[in-house]
Length: 253
Image 1 (cartoon, rainbow, N blue to C red):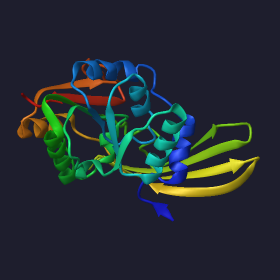
Image 2: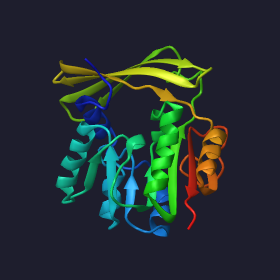
Image 3: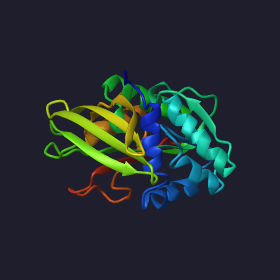
C-alpha cells in the first residue's frame, strides 16, 4: 500500500530524528509571536515540532494537519509534556474553523506540498478569512536545485538510528520536471529492530518548486499588504544559496 498522507512510519521516522525546532528557527518565529495578537494558528503542525515548544513558552496556538498519524504523535508528545493542544484534522486548503487568529504560519517548507494552483488560491483565501485585521501570515517553501539528488531521477537512502536496537532506513525515489517545477517522489520507510526488518510503509510525496513573485501577486490580489520575502529563516531577502524561501504579509486593519 502507498499512502497519500503521512503514514504511521513516516510520522515516527520524522519525529524520532527531529524532535524540535532547527537552530535559529524558533528565534525567527518568536519575533512574530510577540508582535501579534493571540491566539495563533499553525498549519500542517505535524507532530508538534514547533507547536509544542511555542505552547511551552506560554502562547496560545491551535494546530491543523491532514494526517491523523501526525496528530496522534503530537498528542503523544504533548501528554509527556503535560500540554493539551487544540488540534484539528484538516487539509490546509480546506481550512474551516470557528475563530480568527492574529498570526497564522506554515513552516518547514510546507507550501512545497501544495501542488495545484487552485489549492494555493483556496489556501490563501481561507487564511485571509481566518486572519484578524492587522494579523500576519507567514509561510515558506523549498527552493530546489534540479541537479541535486533530491530532485534528480535518483534513489537516495538515509539511515537514522534512534536507539541501540532501532534503525530507520528512508528510501526516496524522485523525478523532477523543470517545465512544471514538480517533483514526483515516493518515500519508503523501513523499520529495523535488532538488525531485522519488521515493517515497511511507502508514501507518495509530490512537491512543487514555487515562483515567489507569482505567489506575492496572488497575495496582493486578495488584499494582503506589506508582502516581503525572506531566506533561510531570516527577514533578509533570499540569497542564491538559500534553500528555504519565506513570504510574510499582513491583512490590513
